[in-house]
Length: 351
Image 1 (cartoon, rainbow, N blue to C red):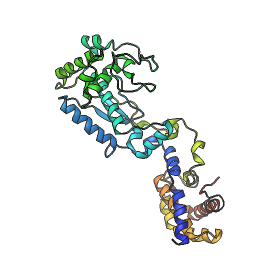
Image 2: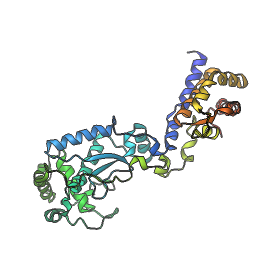
Image 3: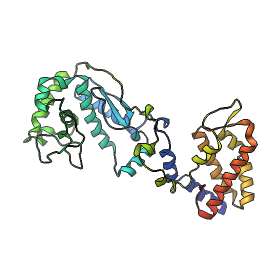
Image 4: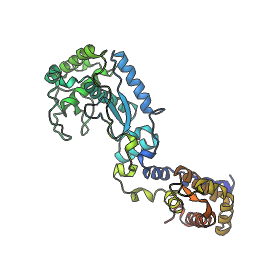
């Protein structure tokens, strides 16, 4: 491999590192990430969930949307799904921060549980006398912190609380949702697994109840979603309550903050020009000038300039077209600083 090609590969690896990409994502507002369900593992799981409901002869299909966490709005038959599961990169960030992994199996467990809530709300089952007799009063106070009995056989074992599958003990609504999830799962073998448990009475009730209401149209069909992704106007960093300094030093190809100082976030002038188009127009000149001034191989500088172009486009930055000369001077100075820091520190950063 030639020296220039090796230099280009080293620079590109640093600029395109996961640590750099992670910091770019952490600094974006969640509503600006353009997250969709289509084509994601979530959509695959939704389709699977609907097939399971069809096999159980249940007419109801809960609407799903991206939100800040798992959940159903209070008595609204919709399922909120965590936004970070709609992008593998965000899923990786969540796993790194929370030391957790939510694969397809865990997603399906969550969806079955939330569908239990949704079908409860869609048919207002919580108002039924027999429902309250089996699960308890829906009006019971809901507490995030509770003291479960890990040895109780009166509840199904499904979702975890503090590392133990006791979530059904949290509230009658959760007990119903957990019982529904176990009942719906095609391979739960619940009649055998819970044969000598008090929870079997709840599962049998669920089986009879779903046969009764399964083909009925829902009483409640829609409502307002809670914290939809379009309204999450805070950054991923803010969502996780993390300090940017914890990640910035590792992001050795990060340039967003520098670009945002040179250019603007909106086309404020009649002669506004897209910043990425401006940088692309002067790409060859920038590379040649910086190489001459620093003595660094052009192959090392090219990935940096290309990164500035792509990030200016992604950030949707603009500039006044009448100020090309002054902006070119600013950009050249900053890019030269990036290169010099790379030469002496091995990092494409501006401190």
